[in-house]
Length: 314
Image (cartoon, rainbow, N blue to C red; front, side):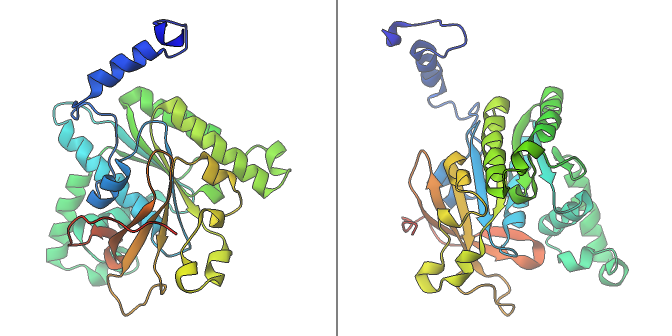
């Protein structure tokens, strides 16, 4: 019987899996789960597990890059706290849209609570006061200790990303990979020649396999199709079918998060509330939580209200 097996070459046996499970009960210190470090989101999803592919999807300007970067910094901060006496594992960011410098300015704005517009090179001299300069210097000194590695120069193929990530993993260990964003990636010519849907399907599947091979969660940011903008009212909330270019994304993903605001962003509302819709969770339920989007600082924060039972996703 299968349950009697204890060793079977490269197979995992129930005996070995059972022992690992028992050892892991209550051992939160050595848990390999990576939290988002947003309490309501972690309560609903239990964090990110090794080998998972997580999709964060939204229409342009809804904050998907900001949320991805915020999660990156949340994880990096905790890695530093948990590894004070040793080298912390890395958080790897592949940016296909923004330069490393642009990402750093967003990180700095969020961490220092300084307007991102003030940190643009063309306005830096006019906007920065001596007090802000002190704050920037102290924040930069803190950030220099964070194990965040940004790649905005490599190619857009999964193979090249995996090669870079494997090298980083062998040098210091890897906790999380974030990719911004999926639709800017490319597959081999033989796949791209068969159409964009087929190409995205190949990329999506390869990202899932990459997560399993590296043993880390991968967050891939994704665009939504224009169809979502044609719906109104309750029907305007994103659905899995709105994932742009391929239905394979929803099949390969373990967790799909949609960012949504019912009325689109109003410039007169400085910190709008954004719904984070859990559209798919392979090992859990769907639902909705809310975060406050401080656009000025490129920062998502918790709402000041207690944990409550979330509404189901549409």
